[in-house]
Image (cartoon, rainbow, N blue to C red; front, side, top):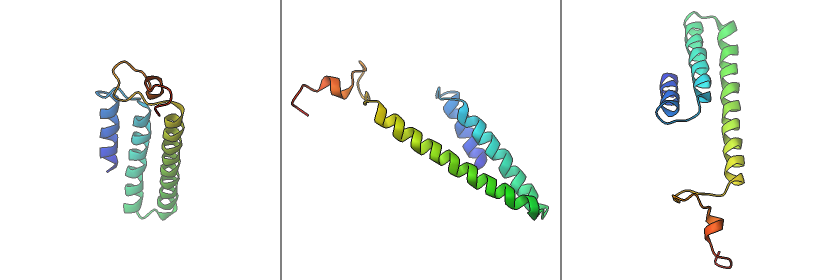
Amino acid sequence: MTLLHLIVAILVWRPGGGSPRPIRYAAGFFALTSAQVALGLAHMTALHVPVGVLMFGLSVLQLVRIWTGRRAHGAAAPSTVGRADGVTSEESTPAGQI
């Protein structure tokens, strides 16, 4: 699953023109997952558990960043979706017809 996450992050960045920032997170999470598997197979519980807790914490942190970023970004800018001229919905609605 983490390899798929990394591939999707690369595809969103390269052909999609998105930000390369999610690639760093996906690559780091892939590395942590690989280390987690290796530590678990080696029965190194003293490192396996802290790495798992770190992965959980980083996942929650990333979720909070995405959730608050979308909400703050979505509330700040009016929608221009579907308009080729880039006019916002507030600009195109005549006064009194809302």
